[in-house]
Length: 462
Ligand SMILES: Cc1cc2nc3c(=O)[nH]c(=O)nc-3n(C[C@H](O)[C@H](O)[C@H](O)COP(=O)(O)OP(=O)(O)OC[C@H]3O[C@@H](n4cnc5c(N)ncnc54)[C@H](O)[C@@H]3O)c2cc1C
Image 1: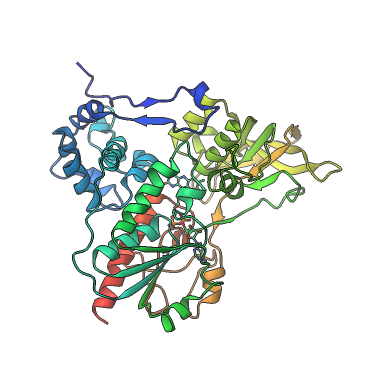
Image 2: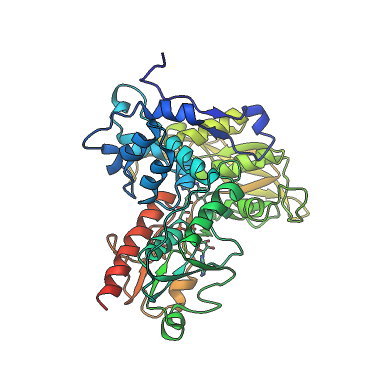
């Protein structure tokens, strides 16, 4: 008899095997495992898990259908609220959202809501089930900028309401961070991301790639000359930050975004692609977030010895516990309480090591976390030939600087109403990382959903 206090374990690739390939780490539940895990759900009347979900999926509703083996019904329940369930089931931080609120979690382990969502979405895809398109079109044109999770969600919801929606995407492939940032071994591109993008298209959404709004065409031109009655900006936060230390412009220093884009979108890891990437022998990744873990695990798979260099301790690592655990299992070395001060450069202007200092934790700072303080005399050189900076990102100011009357804050984030996505410019809405700064897939989706509602209300009253 299975222990109801514990999750049904999920199968994963062996750490030593997966450290050498780019195949998906987590193998997900099969039917029997999913039904067994679903039977752990207490089907609470006042479901706290739903309160923890930024797009308010009817979680007990879909889990009940999984328990009964009605997987198509389960998918229908999820797709009432989410256009990207196979993605969210893989990358959402469930432990701090739905699963963090699960009553089962008080005495034992929360129900594995993420893995059940993933199972349901994968089953639907493998069985050719699609979301239902709108019955009638209303002929009103809406432009969506960016094909990340906020843009895809906003576009999908508006298409379901009958709008004629076009997404304009700067890159040659749709998906935003889902295709260029999150690695293949966490989120398969062809089998999962491309299929969920297809689902959004099947609702009637058009996607025009290779269009940079602010350069190819502006928002004002879309509205004044191209007949778009409203615009949603979901352009993300793709501009990387650097430390400002000496040596940062040397060959072999990358932003995590560039490193990951070369690998994920431009497939540098595949022999049949020409994309150049430095296959460092010893790589330092500076930072402790999810992006740092992704860059570290990617460098490891490209054959390097990899060090995460982070200035606070393990308790403060901002990455998900699961990502840290996976990185450690695969052999990433954690240099905690360590801060770089200079990148050493050789006569070829290439990285020849990284000077660091050891840190200790002092009094809490404004964020409530203990402030790292340098230990005097602790300087040392970390022997590395490649440095990947993963210190966060901010929105690219191209759109805000080319749109008349669009207000931003001092971090260059577009100012938008949380409930409706409304910006300072009439008819223009925004959401996701472009508004909040780097956040999460599901928060971007929640913002896309809210803006779709806001736009519908605006256009219905126009
Ligand atoms: C490496 C990495 C790993 C992550 N891992 C996770 C995770 O595990 N779980 C999680 O929840 N979140 C994760 N995140 C964060 C999450 O991916 C983002 O919060 C989310 O993708 C934001 O969605 P968005 O729609 O706002 O923007 P994005 O996904 O950034 O999409 C914006 C899109 O707009 C396009 N664009 C930008 N400017 C223009 C323009 N001028 N014209 C036309 N198109 C434009 C971009 O090319 C891009 O495709 C990760 C982020 C990164 C970088």
